[in-house]
Image (cartoon, rainbow, N blue to C red):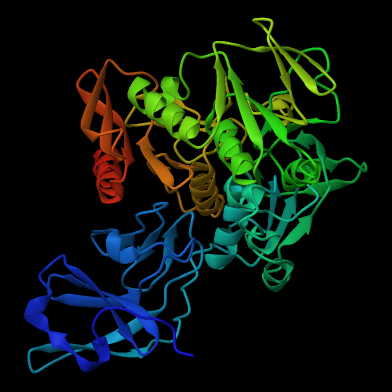
Length: 508
């Protein structure tokens, strides 16, 4: 059976004048959906679906010779199809484009060209060790091999599974609408094929920066020429009587998520502690499972600190419309079996308690090794720590951000992946500054909130559109400058904001 395709048959040709400079058109070649893009006198034809979650690139944004996905901001080269920016890692297919008799014809699918190696082998590192098996660690390992690095590459992870798509743990997988086979970022075959030595359940107890070796939990030592610390963060635990009971859970790893799902058997009512992004995504997933869900949080409205009162009120109303019951300006005082006691004296019956009150960066290993740690592991613009040859990426890294004008640390999935990619280049000696704009998305039922930039605080909040109508753009401004932009239903505007912030970072 043929796949359903849309748009014109590009192999039959379209008039050149139908595609103005900067325009894009989705059509098909056989059963393949193809995106045709014009940049000046050049024409490019690539796959029309993002290789991350199959987002529609035809609804994305063309920036120079790249195309950006409207859903999660993956970036692809129009010339080669290469995935240039996370969260996508697989390339797009490319087709040849022929101009003849005033028409454009998309012809055969092109073979994947071998990427020229940029790894420096003569004086470059022969042994690279990555500590951490999350977003940053995976992205670094993948990029090192993509760049042609052929030396020893070891990934040490104290987790018990290969790197997974962590954002899905609080979304579709927890909701029961995505199978577990969707979660691994890559199967074991990828690591074997690329000679990435992944050691699961392997903790690092010490870093000897002088002799360039790490000590593992079994007492063995592993030498390195370059070391990447990508240890991530750990959930903050609830510190009240009864918080250690078996019905109380946090959510960070696949094991955590499996434990919550196992607890759902026969459960009717849940309490989610914390109205954070992860807390409310868990709320939506548990409601999808048919549970009654109560949300307990100390703030007046959810997400106000990051997104402002207007989106906070919108998010609260959205969850209430789907059945969530909020207990705001309250905290948990104690948990006694199936009863959760609130600070105001109320009691909630709960078969399951999920705690989402934030995370803490895992910086102890870096600090004990002598790296400078101050609200995160301090790194320079190349993501190198104060220890020579030791880099840091992801939730632990605190880097100088040119747009904000100060050091920042961001706990977002895409940030961790992009930092892992940049750290990989710099471990190879390519000296690429980390200038990517922070980005995250949060999914609540059918509503996705996209956020670019980083607003430590703001003195002006500028709203275009209608938040309640799920059609808005919010600028977070300080001193007249826009530090961040959040959108609902305006994906291309969010991409454009990201591109504008990139241009600021590129200024000399």
